[in-house]
Amino acid sequence: MEIIRLADYNIFVGSIWKELQSFLSENSYSKIAVLVDDNTKDHCLPLLEKNIRDLKFTIIQIPSGEQHKHIQTCQYIWEKMMDAEMDRKGLLINLGGGVIGDMGGFCASTFKRGFDFIQIPTTLLSQVDASIGGKLGVDFMQIKNSIGIFNNPKAVFVDAVFLKTLSFREIRSGFAEIIKHSLIADLMQWSKIKQLQSLEGIDWSSFLVPSLKIKQAVVEKDPFEKGWRKALNFGHTIGHAVEGYALETKVPLLHGEAIAIGFITEAYLSHKKVGLSGLELKEIVQFILKIYDPKPLPESAFPTYLSLMSNDKKNENNEINFSLIYPVGKAIINQTADEILITESLRYYNNLFAN
Image (cartoon, rainbow, N blue to C red; front, side, top):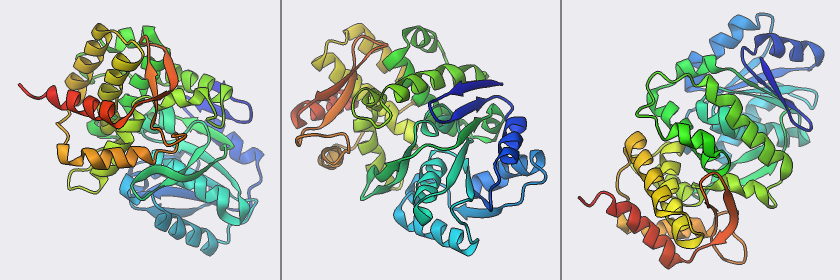
């Protein structure tokens, strides 16, 4: 067990059950609810019930998927909290991926002006990134996380045992955030990652703590995303637009799949804007193409992507804001690009499939 200590909560990494039992025993909660989706109810809730046998709780179940991360689902969660007579001395256990953690934390923080919640992230994506840092909220009008608040959990419990319940596609999606942490802050880890030929047989537990420590360092320096925390958005300005658009199509993308496209396009912007070398750009592109097997973007969607980017919450003064990299292993925040250069980056990406 490794404990990563932040200012006002701890992240427990390893076999979590002893620490979780101690946490519940030490805090006298009036009522406990567990938020799950269709997948975590079947595959993860039994692990919780098996290991914390005397836990009495209400189950709140929602549909799985980013397409359900909206205010109507919050309304359903609040209704179930009301039915369970949850009060301000209650606890919500968010058992799931980034959608569960973001939306559950938001609902707990706003119901009756707020009560405690903890995160038990069950996807690789949420274990290395989404459950840490207190950013909570929902999507609105195709804009990712555009309604939300900052509020920290009481604790986070990260256990690689849950990763055994995931599909390869979900694992690959979560791997994108590990790549991001390496590209913005850990050249040595990127040097190891880019040598991988596939994601088969990887011991993911070895990646958890290094990525969490990068996120910890960034969050502690800038808890409310006023400055340096924006570094964590590398790949996400374009990636979120691609993801938001795809959610309304017949072929939605997982978060990491869209962000991987963002890595290529924003690495290109890094090359054009801040001096990322052509060799570093090529290495990033080749690795993403090898691992993610992405597809070209419809050029007819470019205006929609730009419109979605123009509403990104990081923007200031009507300029689209990016976090870029130069060199690999170092982020440069608050970089802007006009629509001509952004469109050029999208065409650069599509041209990779021209032959």
